[in-house]
Length: 452
View 1: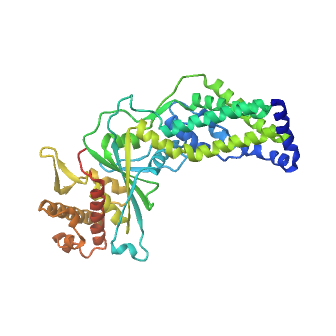
View 2: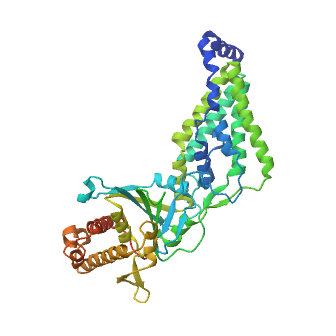
View 3: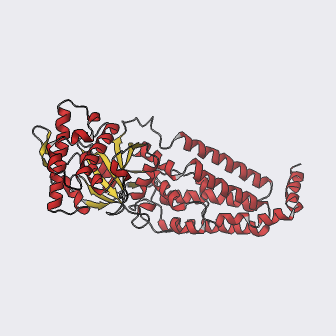
């Protein structure tokens, strides 16, 4: 009976010429770069999360898979030059440095909760306004969880992986029963390829630099370049922000197998995948359809079941034990942007360690040095800084007098003496805009301040 079924199965492909012609084309899809291998490999190195059955590799992707690397290397796209870098400006000391893991940050932020803060300032609708987008990223630690409760992967990932293994096993059995030997070999080679990639690139999830929790909060500004119109401001515990932005993620591997041996095995397996796909296309048999189906199944899995963004989300929650929240707003210009960040920066004012209070009569020199890369020092900047200090101190004075910060408006800020003294300067309105927007962000974030 099985033999009769097999004969019917094989005769069906000869019944219609177009079926055989299509079989001549479909397997070559395995050689087209449908899967974004660099991002997939990056997510795998970050979280160690990618089932072995989902590694059909196109020739274009093989260049990344076979590239030289060491155990100390950052994740695939975090290497300098592999993705756009981020320039970081430290809000406390003014240090300027490249973010250690720029692509990891982008992946993690892409799934973080987003709250949009409205800015109704009249200058927003002005012709020629240089609109700036500011995203404040609040970074916090998740509460400690026992090792028994904490899993490396989410249930959705585990379910997708099991479903894939069941599908692969079913297809392997079907290929064997129908004598589709090329398809059977391909379905065996793909998991073998994934196993070797796991040994060379995988391991446990990357870890942040260890250290005791900090007592103070810090803000670090990040952007592509100093003439950019989109800015990130990472705010949170000082040691956590420093580990996330300024230090490479630590890597742990399963084993220290000889690199040359695993590299040679990987090359043989990749050549095997391509040879089997081309062979199936040349035979114009059912093997071609089975191989094409599995490649399509892997493409859909990488796109919908465990995309890189979801793997990064799992890493943030389960390995790094962090939480990101985004607060996005638009500002009318560069000065309004600077004033907003200054109002949010916990190190803008001097601090008295004895009384544990800010000194609103003096700005902290280190807390202003991050501005140097954007706006050079000079008499004009000194005047603007003093006006900003007086405006921010006026807000603190009003709130100390019992005025609800939610009720502080442009009109109330313009009543102060500082507004009359600096009314003729073009940046006068930008100070008001920056302080009010910063107040709205702080209100929604709920925990903006110097201490953790």
